[in-house]
Image 1: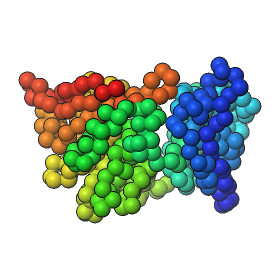
Image 2 (image 1 turned 180 degrees about the horizontal axis):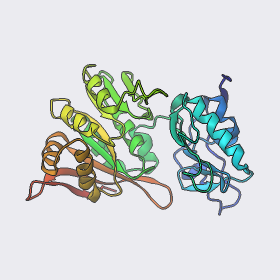
Image 3 (image 1 turned 90 degrees about the vertical axis):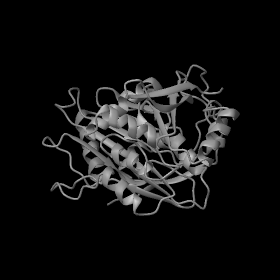
Image 4 (image 1 turned 180 degrees about the vertical axis):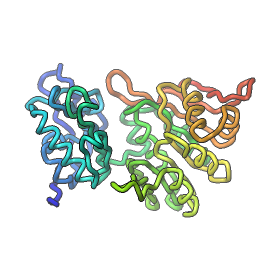
Length: 349
């Protein structure tokens, strides 16, 4: 296997053309020192764009070329033109680097490479226009609440409120759409915990970058080619509880592991947290009901467990200009029929 190559990631210089879709460093978070990272050799075709620390996602196909998301939407990258067979060969190499196999019998595969790089590939005819490759690039930096305040995610009052949530060991659910900043905010909240506490995080793909001296990371494992060896999130939550965590967090709750997380938070594990995909705080209750159904719960059981386990729901959103903000905060409550509702309020500016 080829050795990794080194990339120096830094903020992009301000574009000469003010109409450029790429935001300058002044428009993003405050400038930070260069970051030198080792990248898997199979990612070398993307070396130039990986030098920009703002890059979070890459999307490649023969029909559309390469599109790059720097936090403000997916923009076409000039100079990329690959034939379908070249894109397919690259997809095969990327998936192979994650010890998986993609072919006509297995046309949709997701793998994790070194340092949390996540690759998803789909072959035709499932992808009707040709092979599609999606790559998620994790942030190397570990922004705390102070950095997020300076980036405009919330103001001084909001930071004080979040600090209080951590200090009082409230159980928190962070919600938001894809790319809204759920993982970033959760990592910052966990980073604000006392250095004497033991934090155990459970994730499908290890993306949480927690700046804490006692952070234990558990990551789910897919089955091998023989269909054996899988370790899912539900099992990892149970394993985490045996590790005597002071705080337990699930990176993203997508299924029956909701039952395990709420069960843990209902048995004295305060200061816990998780994230759930939802487009608005008004949609969180319905989303949790759907996840509860996967765990075998009816709506009222889910409501009682949620109200007992969670203290705070924090919803994040990405504005039209690409800025990620805390949009609202709420608390789980029971409505008149015993079902879940989130009693929300606007976030302090």
